[in-house]
Amino acid sequence: MSDYGFTDLLGIVGSVLICTAYFAVSTGRMRGDTLSFQLLNAAGAVLLLVSLYFRPNPGAILIEAVWLVIALGAIGRILRRR
Image (cartoon, rainbow, N blue to C red; front, side, top):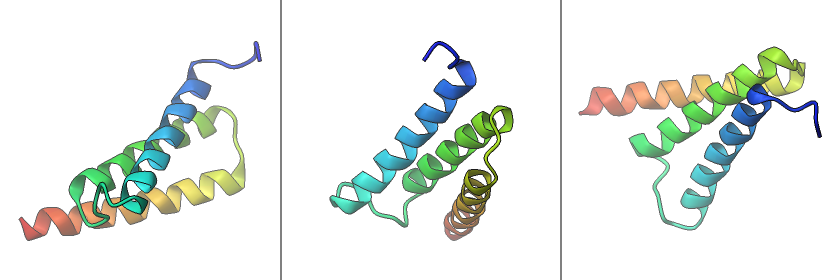
């Protein structure tokens, strides 16, 4: 456990953000079409991608990049509707 550093912590925080958003939607505490949901997902994906830059894993990088693109697209749609 001693080889974990700050970037690993960023990845953990990113995972917690994504899981929190998913939990909130799954339990009805948040709607999936809200800006807050999409921002949580985007922030989580960014933090995970930063972490993965220092400890690369191609599969994880791919899923987080796709997750970020989806979240950014949704954020754009939400902001255009306002």
